[in-house]
Length: 487
Image (tube, rainbow, N blue to C red; front, side):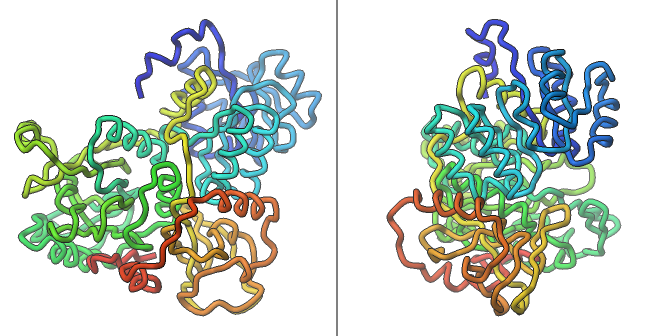
């Protein structure tokens, strides 16, 4: 993003924001960065654990005289008049003082949706960090914002906004994009001397991986061998699928296979890996959104959960020149990868807040459509009455594995994964069965209505399933047969 326009013609206009899920990790990074931006102010912070929230604010340098713990609307309003930041446990109190934009970061599908909806209805913008909300209700909330002349947007610093922004940049330049995506949250770090590979805090023996650092002549065969070497490590996080669903909505890029490919790849290989199959890569078709697991030796820089686009090259001399400067170009010269090896969470989010409030501009696409559906398949046979709680770092739904369906291949009664979260089954679902709305009971009805309204706005052209998708519908591997998306 060109940041120079953010203050142009805005005078001294301050920007005040509300923040839900304010005690979480993303929120902390935003609150920390806010201290460095004088015209950006947190007006009201909402978290169920207000004392923990106050402690976090104190750690970040917010003085006691800047904060006010509030239990009712009157005290929230009074805090606003005094120029203090209100800390509340009850989301119903968010609207009791003045602010411009809500940063929704609870990760709760139903509660996050309700807060975003109420903000838009009261004439305030929304920056959506909770991808769980966006994957179900994003289309409805975007329509609500459009009707009111407001901004509903992803948040810079999260991979969806960063990737959407990179795609917008590439399309503006006329680049011919074949694939887009991001890396998984944690790299695979190889220690060739020890014959081990480490992912976050887990280390396994994988001595054969040292001999697989080069792609060789058969890219897909190498990728299969790498996947087998690290099969003991998990990949295919629910959060990855959710983020790519949000990206698909804003860009129109869609999954090549419902479990994504998840190749174990080095950054310098992305242009070879994300080539079409006839050129040796993994893709059955262009226009794919995907996730890879970054492989790097100890001491090599991380991809840091960054984002990428793979494009077709056109003028050979241009790309030979760029390859000589270190840019990633495929060995056959037909493809190139451009990437951002970072996502800085709330450190970048002020760009979104300033742009939305001061200029009415979202971070990313302006015409969201229902291009893909984040859904779920039963990991095992699930009996009637089974609860479907959501939990864990990646907000997994118990007993259900995430899948990302192309919209035209998703049944009309498909249940979005995060509508199912917290519901229960009204009837049994066989192993591998796709969850449908009729399978569920006890879900949030307002969230369900938002899903239905948003889905009604999806593109009308719906083709039949192709053989590629059909063969993978119940499987656990990418369509290239190279890697399993292991839950």
